[in-house]
Length: 132
Image 1 (tube, helix red, strand yellow):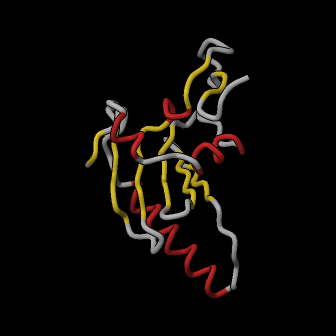
Image 2 (image 1 turned 90 degrees about the vertical axis):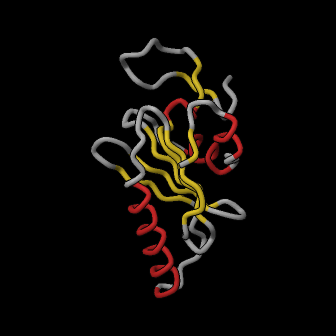
Image 3 (image 1 turned 120 degrees about the horizontal axis):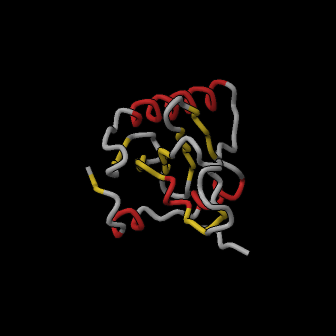
């Protein structure tokens, strides 16, 4: 049994059934306030580009527009699939967390659950992540 932060490796070229943490798949992170405005960006040595944050900013703006014009409620998360990486945006109680993940990362219900409880302070204490 694995905790929410651990799971078997999903990448076929890696040894099966060895635990790794979800954060191993994360190569960038951004924290947005509930209005969709960016507050903090984090990069890793694997990807120090923050241009993807603009896409998340636009997605949050689109979410606001759709929710108000279509009177939708209950936004919990969005996944944006790219050619080199994917991004996951999850609404938490006080802000949105956006994570840029490796293309081989499995974005399933367990991963979304992990992001829902994710603390940005974990990024500040993790040597892989640098505040930009």
